[in-house]
Image 1 (cartoon, rainbow, N blue to C red):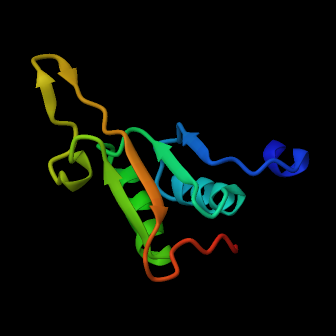
Image 2 (cartoon, rainbow, N blue to C red):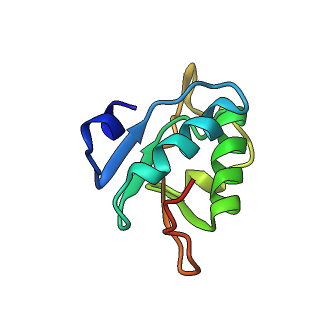
Length: 106
């Protein structure tokens, strides 16, 4: 809301979302229209089931490309330990796809 109020249109937004299903989708739907047409939305914790569900649903509904820096967006076994006692985080990104995915309309 502050970005819209200030009239700013960023190239990059990093979302540190809640981990409840539906919350991330709502945040994505609010933030996506604020980006420039070539903008990228980044976030973390794609290894959390609720975040994974909402990010993938938003990408599918909007026709966006979903990726990650280490391929973790393709994981299906959530909360995989990196080493005993530690879990990895999955940093993901969304950007417009080839078929109209850069549409920023609500």
